[in-house]
Length: 432
Image (cartoon, rainbow, N blue to C red; front, side, top):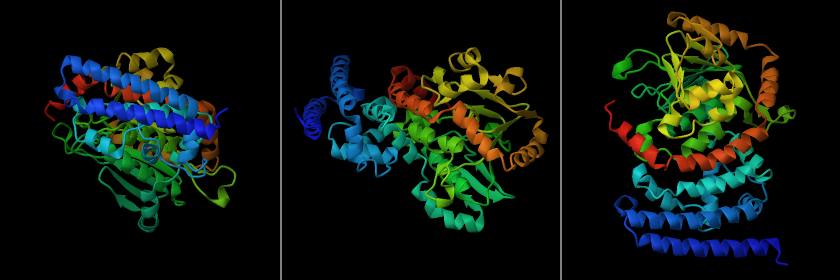
């Protein structure tokens, strides 16, 4: 009988050899956009064969691979660090940094689709009851950027980043999305800045509650008006600047999951949980489209202006709306959830059905007062403990992890679907 470590070594060697032969054949073909129909079919068949190999390899060796990458789970690697380590330790399993850089230089329609291989790998890791929880926990730790900025933020209470402004005032961490020229459309910089802001809000002992609101726009159609969020930046997706790991997975496993569960801290005073969590309020002006609507399901209290609306157009765009498929039916019931996700139904804040997702609907000129009332209402000593128990009951960590495992692969397939590339390409050609 072959020892497990020797079996892994042999299997990894076979995978590396198969991947090497694949790369040689691929190099003989033109770039994806220049291939003939016959060449595209040939490349697709080659990709499929190797992806079957990768899937079987991970099915047999996920926990051993993960243990090798994390020193027996003694080291917590974030997803971007994990795929980088996997590329170095197991050639052919996931794309290398050079391959990803080449992909990133191309439009979505011109890419090879190598992120699908990251999806195969991350689905297996997240699906594992051993490796998966360890990875999710690693993603709940504060980012190095936030830890570097923490001392100065504790002193000043103010941080201005490209996509998010953060201010601590009267015990409230006030996060303002400030991409005023693009209606707070989400990109990788926005995810980076949001996670930094959420980390700081949760780490700051002077903060008792968080608030998220959109700032005033300079966009010609909404100049001077507050807008919550237009969702994913489809122009960035078309141009190839929305990545599976850096945006689609980091967003859900990073700052949104931290809003729901809190941030993992090494603090002896938190022996009872190890998490620093706080209640959160969201205030919707204008609209919360796509990712903006997804965000609302992670918040404890949502206020919407009476002339605002919510929508999840991801199915029409061809992609999966983050964790909304996991969370939405809990709020709305299954029939309305399908109308919103599959049918693209728009909910105006003034509609009765919108009250399933929004706690308060107020006139636009009453938003400021309503926000301050809601922040005061979440200041009670027992609020944090009760929201923690509500979230634990409504969204058990294991169920979230299992959803994210399948999401990792299915979303990687969707962002390379021909229908998606066609739709976002047409959107990218529209005037702003």
